[in-house]
Length: 154
Image 1 (cartoon, one colour):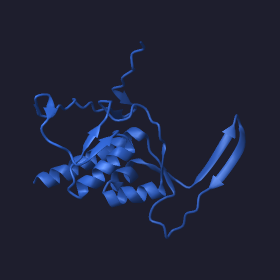
Image 2 (cartoon, one colour; image 1 turned 180 degrees about the horizontal axis):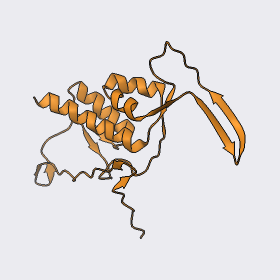
Image 3 (spheres, helix red, strand yellow; image 1 turned 60 degrees about the vertical axis):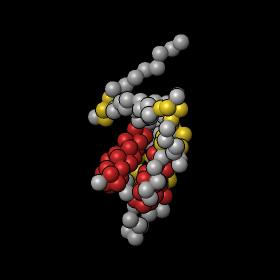
Image 4 (spheres, one colour; image 1 turned 135 degrees about the horizontal axis):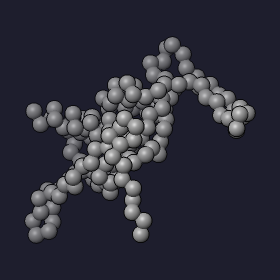
C-alpha cells in the first residue's frame, strides 16, 4: 500500500486540518437528523452548503479528506462562476487573490500554436476568467460558510 502524501503547505498557502467530528450518538445512531447531506467538500459541495446556510438551511458535508484539496485540480474560475460567488457572498476573497485575464496563448516548445481572446468590455463588472488554485477556492468557501454560521448563531 502506498501512503498518501500529506502536505502542510504549498507556497504561501498553509493547509488547515480539520478534526473529524462525530455527532452525538444513541445506541450507535446519530440522534439528530439532517435535512440536507452533501457528498463531497469540493467547490460545488461547499458552494451548495454556503447557499443553504445563507437561507438558514443547515446541512452536513461528508468529505473523506481532513483538509481542502491537496494540490489543485482546477486553476480557472469563469465569469459565470464568479457571478455565483458574488450571489453567495464569497466574491471578495476570490477577486483579491485571483489573477484576472482575458487573453491566452499556448506554445509547443517555443512555437505559439494557439492564441485566443475572450469577450470583455468596460460594461462588465467581472473578468471573463481568473486564475485561482482550488485549495484557495475551497478555503474561501469554508471561511464564507463559517461567517454565515457565526452570524446565524448570534
